[in-house]
Length: 130
Image 1 (cartoon, helix red, strand yellow):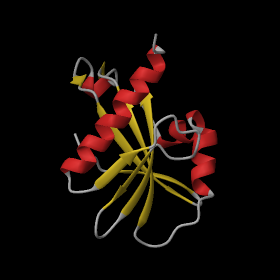
Image 2: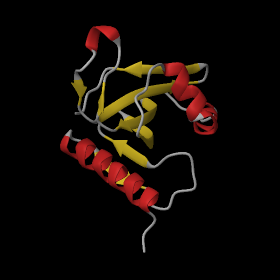
Image 3: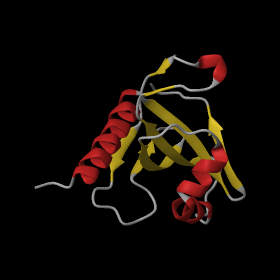
């Protein structure tokens, strides 16, 4: 029997590959990866090295990502790379009800939150896939 958490991770990694392929990238998932990256995607302009995660809970701040995935983020920060190579953390956030005062009762559908990882930190980037 397949581990439920493994299956959830696998599903998000394959979704990442599918969306990148549809966007014109050659993309490959590194199955059973014990390395830093789950997906590598290449087109004529960019190479994307991607770690894929899944979160059941909403992400309130970039700093919470840096804390929650600390070991992965630190490993990604150490990877040397040239211009044209992007090191990314994609976090799939399950659908949830927003609870802030100005959005109370509104529903946010499930989707990606994407972060670029640099030597000195991480920055959230606008979603380019839905």
